[in-house]
Image (tube, rainbow, N blue to C red):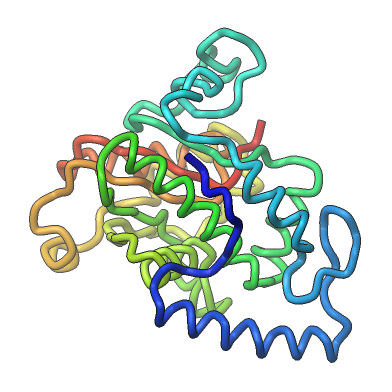
Length: 270
């Protein structure tokens, strides 16, 4: 069941105190500079690019991942279905996902939600990280209740040099909030070895690049993080487009010995 009360605050006390301190500083700065604007309704929103009512709507409107709502999703890619057929049109023609055991996008990538992701990834509005982390954590709890308790999260790794170049990576920051704020186990079992950005590539090019990009981390890291491969993991990424990235990562995890790979993404492109 989704939480009735809405709060972005982490569960862990230390993380909660740190967040309140940082929020206070950001609130003062926002007041001095005039504050941000809500990408959904256009009103002044203070610290976040979502006003409180729109933020509540965004978090609560995430597609549920419980077993009771499974029939509303494509059984392969997890995108919301528009008919009673269990497969979306893309997966009926040529499914890209073979090694995943369940894929769960939380929102469709359209309308004002595109602007929200753009603000986070391109404009570096990192206050959204906690909003996305809370939404992911809500879904994480549902997935754990459905498939098993305390399933480790495996982040899709950034391209080499991204954190040094830009100072941060979106999925890495989500995992930081999940671990420090809610004690979610995070295993960085994968690495990326190519610098090619996939957002402007077509379906076939994405598949080729992805298959040559994602690999298991080095033996020392694997031995330190997971001397015994976990039975199940949840692969975390921001956007499901063609499924090539998730498929490449899932195939590597299965080769490592992971039995079940579930994927959780913030958005999916229809």
